Each structure stands twice: as structure tokens, then as C-alpha cells.
Length: 332
Image 1: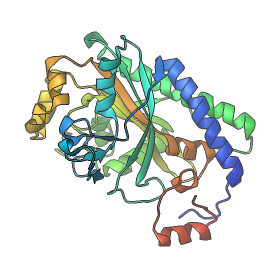
Image 2: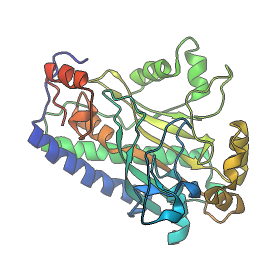
Image 3: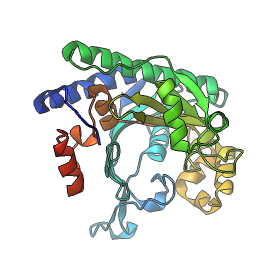
């Protein structure tokens, strides 16, 4: 738990600042990536295959719908990774244009702590690309565009609230999961991230999902949306929590070949029969890239907060609430 913590903003100022961040960042992101805002679902029919399976073990929140008995119930989305790609095709987006949306989810199996909540809020974005654009160069340029958008919003925020002491770097260090393992073979994946990001405060870790030379995986990734060779996590060093904080997970999406290969590697070829997967395999959906940017985490980082519950309303264990209050951390 943080000691000697003193929030830079009052609760009222915090709410006003959150509103500014969300409004300004959306403008910066959409301008740099050529996106328009779209309306998105809170829940989907599980038979469509549109829900994100995350690492494959998280249980979605399910509920029945008496008024629509033929679909047998619905699932609250874990993310919109697959829905967005379908929407690009349905709405007729052209190459190098796309959408962004507010994604709200409930992740019931998340263990609440300073960075994790059972309530998730993200800006989910997706844009159309071509086969020739499926390169690491495009991925890197897009990461830099997102970092520039974040830093521009943060600079504007600090003109309103100069008491905010957090600084963010526009200079992005790119490193692959294998390079991290080679650099810190004795550390766990999370320890590697912390060790590297402390020295490189804005870092993009690439190639997440596949097996490393050690036969382990840096982290789990669903096999049917990101191409594990062309994806990654954007991380910033948080000086308040003194750890690396993942702000965005993103990547170039699978084409038909990579979808087959990755599903085969995880032994889940059965999902290839689902409607979404059939649309990818048949080429009915456009090639795309996209990701999610955590709204609460970004606000928390920019405002120098010690707990995600200071910028979002959720449920927390009583023991955590009491411990936070004792350290002057007021959870909303």
C-alpha cells in the first residue's frame, strides 16, 4: 500500500479532470488515426463467436432474455475486438479509416487491486488496412500516434491543473517478449516488464501470445483476433505505484492463415466453425488493426492517482476500502 499519499486534486477537481481527459483524448485519437465514433454493444449472442475469450478461462456474465427465447441468452462483452472488425465491413469503412467506441465490460473473475477492477472501461478502436499494410512498421507508427495523443492530452491537462506532477515521455522503446526473456532470463514476465519499463518509461512490448524459447508464454492472448507476431502492449512507468502500467493492448488482426495457425497451436480449431471465424476465413471481413485503451487507467496515470477506484465507481473488498482510507486513498 502507498504511504504518505496526498492526492493532487479534490474529488470535485478529479471529476472535472476525468471529463476533460476523456473529451480531449477522444479528439486527439480520432484525428491521428482517422476514426469516427460508433455505437457499440454491451452484450452479444454467444453463438456468433463475437465475444472475446481473453485468455480462455474468464467466465462471461450471462443472462437469459425471456423476450428473445430463440437465442438462448446473452453474454456481456469482455471486449469488442471481434465486433469492431465485423462493424468495419458492415458500415463500409475504407482503407486507413475506422471507428472508436466506449467499451464497458464486467469481468467477474478479475481480482480487484490498485490496477484491476471487475468493471472495465476502454476506448476500443479499429481501422481497415490492406494485406500490404500488415507490417511491424505500421504497428510502430500507430503506437507512436497513440502515445503522441496521450501526451498531448496530458500537456493540456497540466495547464489546467499545474499541481499534477506526473510526466509522460513521447519517446517509445520497442522490445519483443523474446528480447525481454533474453535480457532477464531469471525474472518472471511481470518482473521483466517492471525492470525494463522503469528504465524506459514509455515502452511497447511486441509479439505477445506465442511460445518463447523457454517454451513459456509471456502472456496469454486469444488466437482469433491479434496476430501474435504483430501485436503488443503499451506500458508506462507509474511513479506513484512504482510499477509498469499497461494502458493499451493492440495489434494487427489475424488474416485467414494466421487464424488457422494460432487456433491450431492452442487446440481450439472447433471455434473456426463460428460465424465470425467463417467470415474471416472466407475473406468477407476486411483486414484490420485495432486495440483497446483503458479509460480509467489512463485517467489514473495522468492524474497521479494511487488506485483505479479513485477514478471509477466499482465494488471493492471491505478490507481494501478500509486500508485505502487509512492511506488517504478515497475510493469512489
